[in-house]
Image (cartoon, rainbow, N blue to C red; front, side, top):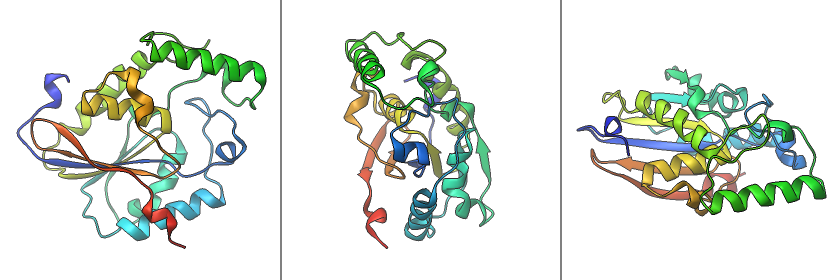
Length: 213
């Protein structure tokens, strides 16, 4: 972990994936290049998350530059909580495969690149896309911003599935090859506590709020 991410402060990060979009529902790859809206289910998930966590005294909200993240936490923004968009929180770019429906051919390509990443080939990427190492570089920039504000003790971060897995590796000191050890679904929560020295996941893949109706 870079030294500039360490400081003498405590901070609690509530990290969530955005709510469902129609492309999520249809199994179509989104990625950084697809700026999609939440669907009805995604908006329902956003309300459920708000109902469960609107009593948390968030000092700041950080979102990606893709509108599905802002839509997922808009009820908190409407309370007047300040927010900031960070490109470092954007989803990994899947390049030529963004917007494609699943086919036997592209499923095979995804399986292969996942194997490459698992094998430590973290510079591999699809044409026009991003590698895990490239996402890591911009996430470190985003973390530098987030962790440079000791007055923001409780922070809400809304981002994307693959990017969230990479970020959790960075925070916990896991190699990026272990990214798939962090399961997720739409609007699932990872709560991370920083004690001034290390990050600890204190709530892992929590979806209890989504069970309410």
